[in-house]
Length: 288
Image (cartoon, rainbow, N blue to C red; front, side, top):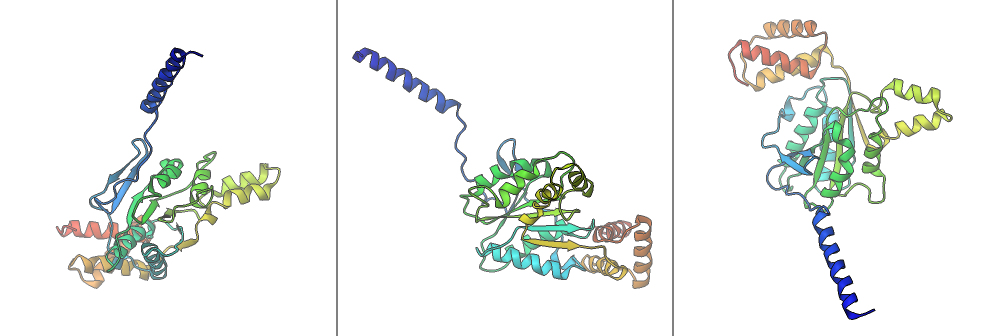
């Protein structure tokens, strides 16, 4: 082959390489996490949206969950110190402070002396399929990161739970050492009972089919169960909020109004207590 022919081939190869470089997506780089301590994952733009002010309550206001609080705090502190820590599933009754506890524990640990602030990144339920991509971006980040998904559950033919399983403990790379995953759910196994029963009734090997579904929750080393509160616990929550915000009201009037409020709502929970206190503060012209 002549020199001119070889030069022509080389020129064409150079043009192909340059064209490929222009069309190929850039290699992901670790995101900048220094601006704030909390972010929301935006998979469309492969970016983290900073959250300047996180909506959370003080840890001292979360009543009736002392043991769960201490367990989550201990796990979060160990993680922030670079020690082994578990993924956590907070499951159970509605309105009992599952997501509030995650956000409050993150803030409390970040106030501890001698610790570099851990970052809290929320990933929405509908974006859970992009979790492996987010973890890949965070793998080389110089920060400890808590990934948080609120109200996580799966329905019907939804197969995105498989992405979650692989990201948490599966795959070749596994979960990055600097990342831990916290999720809240009303379901202990994240899947509805009728979905699991359907698998049992239609599968060739019913036991194996159900085990495959249930194994998702096994990826969480800590299960923290939240249960409905008693009347005394509910009233303690109300009193805690009232004292914290300096709302002046007699014990008898507070008890009567708080119980009437919970009766009309048909429930007692931390969320109901907070909604009552918001109403009480509004009636008294107090800004919270």
